[in-house]
Length: 68
Image 1 (tube, one colour):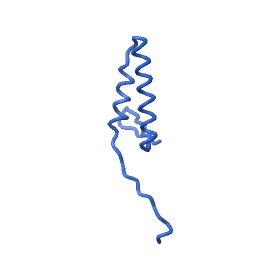
Image 2 (cartoon, rainbow, N blue to C red):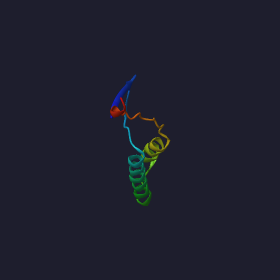
Image 3 (cartoon, rainbow, N blue to C red):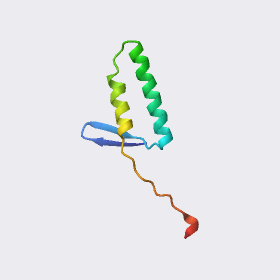
Image 4 (tube, rainbow, N blue to C red):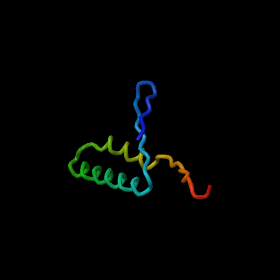
């Protein structure tokens, strides 16, 4: 996880593989459903859920030391 500071905002960046991203999405969705059942606001969970769903992907190069 890396931290970037832009102006006054501090941002945290977590690199997740597709399986980890799915786990986070599932957990946030379950939390959202619990809040809906309790008639509590879901705004914060909705915002984070959308960020995780819409997060850009980055291709990672795997270095093959044996080929050299």
